[in-house]
Image (cartoon, rainbow, N blue to C red; front, side):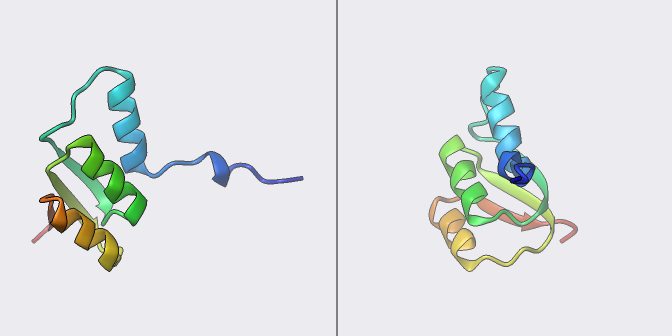
Length: 81
């Protein structure tokens, strides 16, 4: 039997963006607050959603995700600074 629990899960960033879209909330130009520095997939979703700033608490080093966000002009800030 396959454990499909992990197959159905999303990262918090993905869920927040999807829920905003589902409920007609425009996130373009917004700030997203997350517990960990976004992974590459979440970074791509953040960029495509038009989110301009990401504030995170814990590091999750992903140089490619950091570069994608920087190239797209998304500010990445660790809190507390």
